[in-house]
Amino acid sequence: MRPWNRLSLRARLTLLEILFLAILLILYTALEAFFSVIRIVPEAQGRIISLLVVLVGMILSAQWLAVIILKPVKRMSETAAGITATTLHKRLEIDELHDELKKLGITFNTMLDGLEHAFQQQARFVSAAAHELRTPLSILRTNLEVAGDSDDGIDPSEWGDYRATTERTLSRLESLTEDLLLLADGTYDRTHGEHNVVELANILADATSFMEPMAVEYGVTLHLVEPCTALVKGEESFLFLVFRNLLDNAIRYNRPNGNVTLQVVHEDGRVVVRVSDTGKGISPSSSELIFERFYRVDSSRARRNGGAGLGLSIVRHLLAFFQGTVELEASSELGSVFKVTLLEGRLR
Image (cartoon, helix red, strand yellow):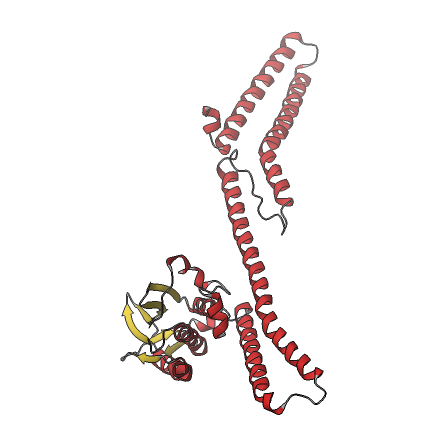
């Protein structure tokens, strides 16, 4: 790279300005000397003409500098103007830019990366949501068609199965709709929730009690390790949903006669809740994908068990309101451990 190209844009412009000023001063001195020697015009008029020539030179040099400065900016603006929702893959060419303009180009390209990722997520989310809604709606349509095709209505002996199927399908639709609304709602006032301090033991006890019937149905035993007393920052209803969804996953994908354990500990000034299960575990390749909306480790099994793949997405979404986190801490053939970290709260 040439020494000139190694200089920043600011340094190059400074050097050019100094060069132009030197040239203009030399030009003014030469013109004034010329008019003084030749004496074709009075001395005062000669100085005026010299100043006018220098002024014109300053204007032309300023225009030339402006063209040099704005040329890459113009190229960037033309590229940016051509980027739409369907062409978010395009990026600004920044290899030939320097310093401030290069930083601007990098910032703009980073913003485009985020927008492209957001649009891709939105497209996958809409597609997956439509797919999830299609199945229960198809079941309801089929049941209505069967009921309508019969002249005498549904056979009384089949009414119980028909009602159970319809209620199960409607429950799935209601649950899916609530989950979608919860994920889409961005109106929650985070500043209000950050000041709330709640007792974690009560929330864990309520969540465990609420999920007990499901645990019995799946043949899974729930354990809440004592003591679990801790004050944390958060919203009681949201934290209940967090642990309800974690327990739901731990029960749903556990082994027969399996166990689910909740344990509270204090680590580095924060409250940590570990939800451990005795399921088949999660592969390393899926350890982060499981928090994506509608992602399932075992798609066929999840559908059979009624899961929509939104539970862990909701957990991460709700914890973010209170600067909490969730991660898959460990997983093997013997089971998985999810780690929830919450800010410790103090009563005023």
